[in-house]
Image (cartoon, rainbow, N blue to C red; front, side, top):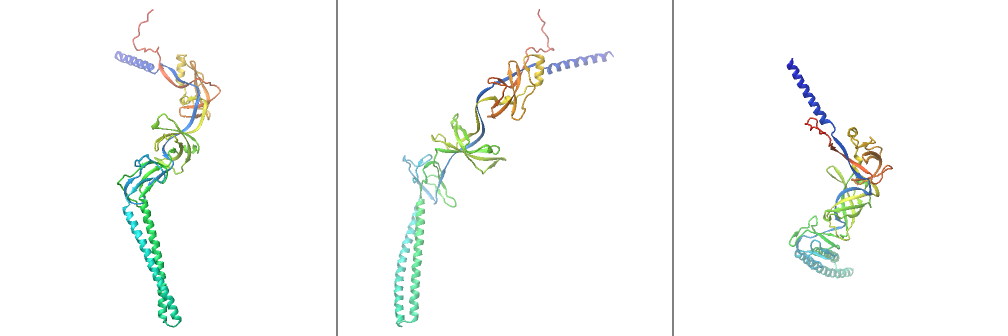
Length: 416
């Protein structure tokens, strides 16, 4: 029995020790402090973000209508061959294609035209002869000096001669058409600029053979006017309904970090695309590039400005999500008098309103506010129980108590 009581006593001691450890670990040895931000006035804009690419408004793709080897490029105003970035005027020579084959075709067509003209003269002479014989046959037949057979033969020869003249005229028309076609093909070997602009892409080199079949090969890409550009921005279907023509836009490009550019919405294209099950619409944004600082095809980070408010009261968005820990507030009230919560209501309340917490001295209290637009970091608020400069609580931090002591550690004897 003595052994049983000894074991029971050891178990009770161990249980008491475990309970003490559990109580020490579970007790609140911390005090609460709050992170705050001042209630301040400022400007805020509600925006929609998107990305896009800067594009020239009007681009002309200059191609070749004939096949052949590129023999040379034209010369610009500086005397150099046209190349990327060259300023081009309408009608200026861009390139020449070897025209030896087309020149030979033109010579053949010219010879055919001359032959057709000579054949017409020959047929006209035969017509004149057969016409005279026809008139003579008529007179002889009336005088009964020729037979009916001779009369009919003379008439038939005259009709055949007239038909031959018509055939010769048709041959001349065909020869002229062939000559005109050969001349056009020969002219197509000289490629001139159809517009004033800047060459933004040269797609061939001297000596390269271009083949014109069903599609005309592209030789040059010319932008008519780089003082005006467009951004083609991809906008999610959830946001596209808020975007209207004329809406102001700000954007930045990585090439000019820290520089903010401005534009305005032109139109929303209706041919939506789907990328990874997300429907995207292309929005055209008109941009003034009078200083020609922006370059085509730069990636733009776009912000559509839906609404702007100036000199409005702003709170960090974190303050709208904050609510105090009620259990910790209760324990802190029992252990210290450093913080006293005057209201236990927190978080969203009525539609269009939120509750924020304001720190005054060592106490905090809640204030109901009406929220406005937000830029993702700050939100416009309005209400009667707050003033500019109030400390708005954005979060709470638990810090260890300095006076907490472990009862299981050896204690120093107190000195009197």
